[in-house]
Amino acid sequence: MSGGGVNARLRALVDGFTGRTLVVVGDLLTDEYLYGKPARISREAPVLILRFTEREVSLGGAANAAHNVHDLGARVVPVGVVGKDAAGDELLALFRGAGIPTDGIVSETARVTPVKTRIMAGGYQATRQQVVRLDREPAHEPQPITEDALLTRLTSLAARADAILVSDYGYGTVTARVFDRIRTIARRTGAVVTVDSRYGLLRFTGVTAATPNEAELEHLAGGPTDDEREVDKAGRQLLERLDARFLLVTRGSRGMALLERDGATTFIPVHGTDEIADVTGAGDTVISAFTLALASGAPALEAATLANVAGGIVVMKRGTATVSPSELRLSLGGSATGSAS
Image (cartoon, rainbow, N blue to C red; front, side, top):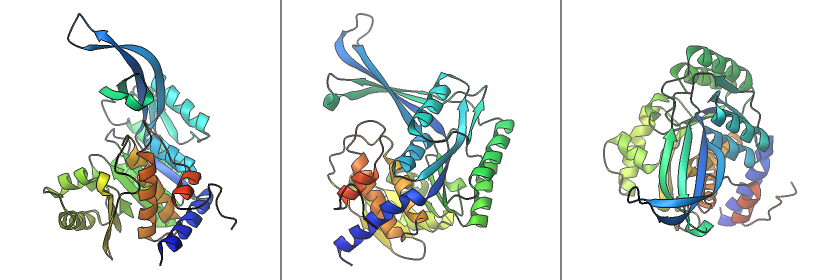
């Protein structure tokens, strides 16, 4: 099939996202950006003084994955935990402002809402550089009463979902009980289950697909992944350990590798330029597009190709960003408004 034929199918796939419902379960966090212009060197210590100019805040972690699903045109229901604090209030307000429902989110009094604060220095958008990042993190997993509330919401809200996306950033939301419930629901409904886990991917067995980056794959394999042969070998081992159907390995400027349990390994070159502006949240965009495409009935290679295009678009944007259907259609050689089908 020609590239034009593939692109036409991918554009039609994007047009169908509006009819899909995804539940995103995981660690909801806030990405905070504090911008300042370099003023002078401090007399207190050999450090740069920045004169504060502005603050931006956006949805991060699983919240960013949910935001990506929403901006791709599907219906999304986030399920997770926030603290009863200013950051939690702000995160809920960001969801509501984006038109994303919050009935799957549980508030816990003693919990800290995770916040990643990036201090950015520079006079203009193009030259702003991250100086340091400060993370505020919860000290423990959600309380048992919170876990019970999560299970109740998950059971209700995921009953008619086309897919369940697990976004695990290591803050404890997706407990063993929560993941067991996800698998139980998926077995009953036939929903696609995908996982992006920063530190605990091996906990999530029996899923449709996982999306580690190359560094995560190398860590799990315990050996190098410097070339395609090593990526294939390590990926095959991980597929077996996860009992997953697909593995989509993101490889930065080298594109992606799709491994199919009952099929081939395909290496997909990077979409667009390899001059990347910002990789923050790019993995959230990739798994959101990949999951939506799989949930829409796309073959794995077409789903991975679409996710690769989405990832190539988002890394050219600064900060935590999303991709729109019109941007995808334009990158696939179509009009921004979609087909007439």
